[in-house]
Amino acid sequence: MASRLPYGVTPEQPGEGQESVWDYPRPPALEASTKHLVVRFGDVIVADSHAAHRVLETSHPPTWYIPRADVDESRLRRSSARSTMCEWKGSATYWDIVGDDGAVLEAGGWSYENPTPSFAPIAGALSFSPVSLTCELDGEVARPQEGGFYAGWITRDVVGPFKGIAGSWGW
Image 1 (cartoon, rainbow, N blue to C red):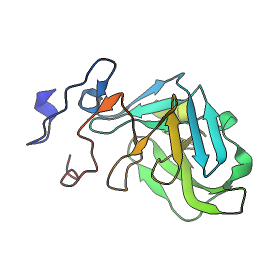
Image 2: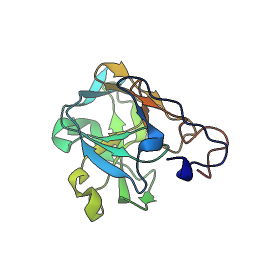
Image 3: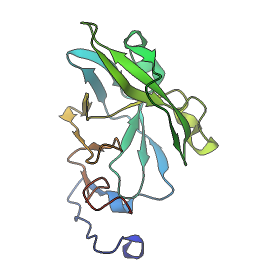
Image 4: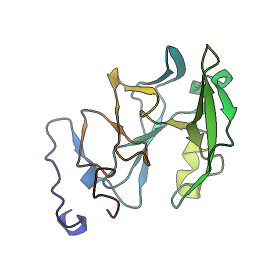
């Protein structure tokens, strides 16, 4: 582990039941999970699942992908606000989220409709960021990853430091 750490980075020591993001692989890995995920936009439940996948990448808290069957598609509309390309997963499709009151969160979720072969299990699954939404993992509200670029869910079961903090762009 120490050989791949950026200069000056000291990983936090995980406690019982915790994982260090510095033990996650690069390139990232995909892992199925039966943990309970709930995503809310205000009071509206957008997604509720026990069949998600998480992406594990060195220095990042997990990013979660929820199967389309567990997402309220009436709350989604395809977004033209954003487009990105991931070197590992491929081209992302963004989705606006619509609330009961007509409020819209532009590009509030994203998916990989035709991901690379390594990420085929998440084809069409939706991911959401805890920056603008309430994202819960087994009842715990996730904290957002700093920096605004990444969308990892920080919960008590992962320790960092996490990419996104000041000075981490080159990690």
